[in-house]
Image (cartoon, rainbow, N blue to C red; front, side, top):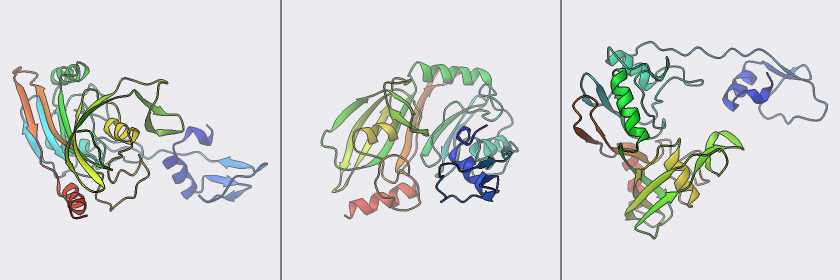
Length: 281
């Protein structure tokens, strides 16, 4: 493998471990490669992901034999992945529930959909494969109700709007998504202004599709990035309490009873803390 086959996080770990040498010397992050440099890349062993059950605080909003709805806290990664091998929501779910669906593979038991680590709010979990198939089909059919609350930079003058712009992987940064016509999928976000402040706007967003980072990408695309988003947009980070994006509502038809169910989550303290600063400005 070449160094470009690794993610930025993996390269940084390789440098820290002395696995990357330039001209027979251990490299530093700050070193700028020069022409004719001799670069040695040692064998990198990815850290083992841990699927053991872990006793974690889970805010379970609803649970029965088929589904579970959890209100995810700020900073919690949904499932194990390189760079976040343990202490994820999945580890907590394995401790809490005896059974979870296995359709999404070994490292994503029960996970039908995801929200970002620093996005808070409601997430539905399948406790068996029949429930998982039903919820996944509802997602595919766009019948799942998902409403988010977001605080975005700048003042949005339109009371309502729809962003219909396809999203795909950013060719310049494989960890980011972007609005593009190349290798992209349809992405539609509806928004409504709730409150305007001097430097920001509080909005609600209803997802018609569910692409990775969809709201963050779409709001940045129209010039109103999410407040405290560390990836999209070039606005200052106010503090380390997480980005101002909250999955407030989720609604779906129960896989077994066929009854429509809807759940609501209030804005968390980390969001309210930042919001108060804009109210006072």
